[in-house]
Amino acid sequence: VITGAASAPVCRGRCRCETIRRMDVRKTVLVGHSAERMFDLIEACEHYPDFLPWCSGATVVARDEATVVADISVNYHGVRFDFRTRNPKRRPTAMTIHLEHGPFRHFYGVWDLTPLAVDGCRIDFALRYDFHGTAMARLALVFGPFENFALVLMALVLIATLSQGSVLKGLMSGLFGM
Image 1 (cartoon, rainbow, N blue to C red):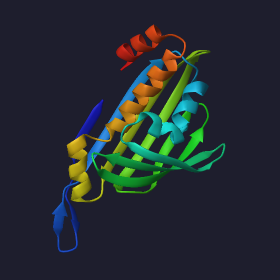
Image 2 (cartoon, helix red, strand yellow):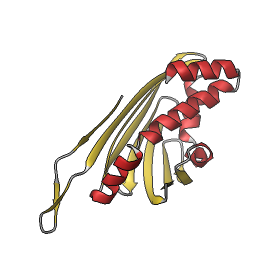
Image 3 (cartoon, rainbow, N blue to C red):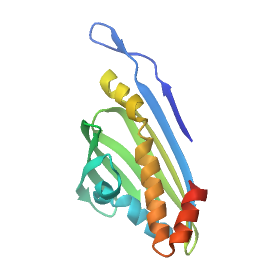
């Protein structure tokens, strides 16, 4: 489920009002792989440029058992921006996404993984964000909400993971799970 609504005007300076678009992204999938394996794929943000066309770079700034901090560079149709997230994690069941800096007024996400069997889990993803300023808010309307991040990442992680054992199983899971 993806929803978006314009938030209340934000006044700056001489009461020049700017409407900021707030977006909510929610996705749930069932996969035929362990929560550990899926968590490792989700947490490996340094590989995002390999399969997310809008991600021009990703650098892990810090990583330990409790947190991963990453810088993400976006280049979508010539519009470029960078942001940093600090993501507390509990492998293999949860990771929370907190914005440290970037062009967002608000940016918060949660990955929840629920083990269902030795080789299965449920993945719930939620992301809420809105951009600072009208230029970035207009950008969100041009290329769609940041759901590209959530949906493309989720779909590719799911299909790539499931396809390793069986292409047919990966395609079927991708079709029915997405």
